[in-house]
Amino acid sequence: MKISERAKPLKDKFGIGGIICSAFLICAFLICLFADFTAPYPYELQNMDLGASPPSFAHPLGTDIMGRDMLSRLIYGGRISFFVGILATAVSILIGVFYGMVSGLAGRKTDSVLMRIVDIIYSLPFTIFVILLTLAFGRSIWLIFVAIGAVEWLTMARIARAMTLDLKTSQFVEASKAMGQSAFGIIAKHILPNLMPSIIVCAALTMPSVMLLEAFLSFLGLGVQAPLPSLGSLIKDGAEYMEDAPWLLVFPAAFFSALLYCINLIGERLTLKNK
Amino acid sequence: MIRFLLRRICESVPVFFAIITATFFMARFVPGGPFDKEKSVPPETLEALNAYYGLNEPLGSQYLKFLKNLACGELGPSYKYSGWSVNELIAEKAKVSLELGFCALIFAVAFGLLLGVSAAVLKDKPSGKAIGAFSLLGICLPSMVLAPVAILLFAIKLKCFNAMGWNFPSDIVLPSITLGLFYLAWIARLARASTIGELSKGYVKTARAKGLGPFKIYFVHVLRNAIQPVVSYLGPAAAGLLTGSFVIETIFQIPGLGKFFISSALDNDYTMVMGCVILYAGFIIAFNLISDLVLAALNPKIAKGFFDK
Image (cartoon, rainbow over all chains, first blue to last red):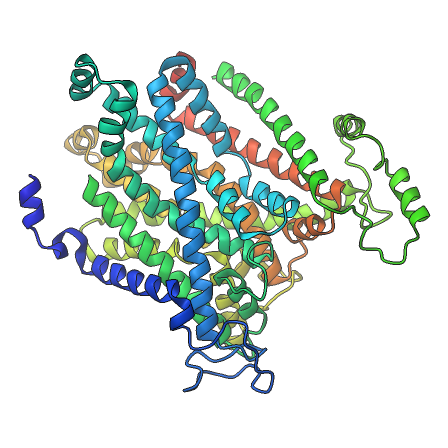
């Protein structure tokens, strides 16, 4: 089973679209990660004489109303989005896996109480709480990670719990228990490794919603603060001047949607592969 | 069924209280008071203002007073818009937001279900695959991307709609479509996946063997089961539409509650923020309740399993 799967070319497992999306995503990630070297200009460098200029040789994606290079701002904004996406996803996965495993292992009473709590939290207007949190504790980027991560862990908790329940009664875990493996050993050796594929899929599906939430906050002016660009605040600025300078809107919007599309597509392919 | 309803209502009450309590204290934690931005106010006047609104009392007694007023349905005066009570302000703004949210929800559910089910039925045909691809595209186009692009295209270039404002009946078209499309795509994906799952089950084969027409199979037998994930998604979708309206109302300059909520939160207008959150929380809890009830009506096992747990 394993060998035949490995023998299949990557194309069949992932599809041409999946490969293109992964390639795009990896390139975009590397460019954004090394923004200090890849961006042609610093993101806050203003050129008031230039103002909002359409795409040209010196500024491939044009400049914004303060004459700041759009390409550079896009790269730095992308870095923030990736940064938030990865860190907040990691936070949410950590909380979710831990909570789900505890719930699954604890069994009956504790389990049903813990999952009922998840059900209830699932239905709360949590975006509103994130907004209040950012107001209460200042608009630091670290807070955004934590706040978003604290909101998005619910799905992971449900999945981790269901898988743990399944694994708990499987024969190899029973055997391992009979041979005297400690509870911690069972978690580390049997449950976590078996949860890994679902964790990866869930991470791929959580990341777009995390990035959306960050862009949403920045769009409302509650997220990343100027002059630091984020894709959300770039889109907001673009929307303000779209009539006279449509390139300010089109490029960030297209880049953001392309990122989301690629991550979603990869997540979808991973889900199918897992089945 | 009635027991299920009662139990769900009883469960919602503490949740509602937890929300308003958390919001009350969180709103007070926000640095600065509601009158900080009025520059030329002498300290004595500020003191008098705070005393008038009861802001210098200990937090505990403020909270109790707030609960007492809430029980009478009175949300207090707005600090920012003097002379207006929160009830009046919210009643005026919420109407606009609810209209918008309702249109977007209807649009998303009706077309989402239609697209999802037809994508499942036409699974192997090019048209079905096209719908699948469209729905994947839809969840990558959040309203903040879609709305400005739609204004650019339909209002500025083609001039079919007004770019912003809330004066004519046609003004509702662009906002509700751009707000609802993301949820439409999600619903289409959910409906597609669950319909495909249902179509492979035995009872569909039996129905076909009995000679039932496709209309009866899809809409009477399959849809009842396939719609369940969509119904349970309606609660989160309603929450998303409400918060999504913050963005849409900002872009289209619609005088609704979402835009108002953000500006009140930035202005530390406590009573206003509390009023909005209470309304939102109540609305979302009610929506979850309704979706649970519909789910229980569709699938009696759910109400039963609820008590077995």
